[in-house]
Length: 372
Picture 1 (cartoon, rainbow, N blue to C red):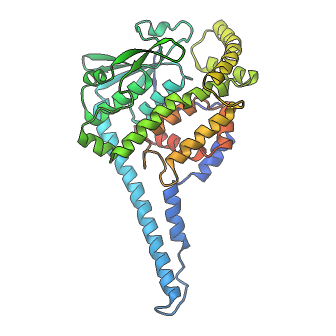
Picture 2: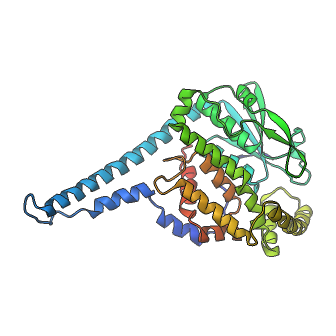
Picture 3: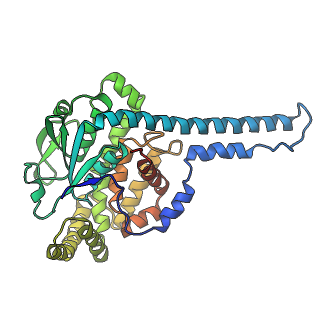
């Protein structure tokens, strides 16, 4: 049965890394730097002769503190303005859309779409698909999830592929073009993958169909647009392929993963028990093939750690998100992919052994604070 959804991904239990991370990341890096500057200046009791180097130094420190406070305040006000502008514009557009997402809850591609919908405050219904029978999507010749049905007035459109869904909806929110027209910019085509299997690919799926003014307003420059596209594709072409080898790395991890999948998915009692044990055994073996196919290291955790730190380095230290003051589509894609591991050993290891935790919590907080 369909259910209205906008809640964050459920977390099975409170995690120590999350509590510690929240304390460390209560303020964005820019804010901490600003307040540190303000606190670093001398107090009113400082004394020095007029015109002395000490007085000039104190004045410089005080000025630095004032500037730090100014930039911090301006950053927060601008972030509030952006949220208000986005909320007002999207409320008007989203009221014209009725969205239904067909998904597997633990699928990273489906998680990407939910992260996008939640961050943009787009209401949607969820239909959980039985991964064995897939009867819920029998209406579709395209047999992969996610599938999004979008009703806009009298027009009902089916959007396939997570990146196409995100690009098409973002184009819709920015440009206001009819969704029926937008999806024609992402035509499907048949291709043969590395294993010689025929697959359906989609043209332009990382590209937003905006005019020059809209693109300038959204990105501010070509470099930001190119960077977002590059890392969205990286999330699909590399990061997502690290998930299965890591969550099914050992028999115990495979069993824990399938226990989670069965609990969160749509299985009958007997079907769930069979899926848990047979699925865990099968995916443990398949994960070894995936490890070989993607040329991963003997310890696949190392590839996951390297990917996370590579992403953190790309975001850099001078901005809270790759999108600047707010997450962009690349931030949401990487977050959505990683989120499916929450509650599993691989996720806890990732938080402990890489630098990704502060960024991850910032994205989680940004999604949670979106006005409804």
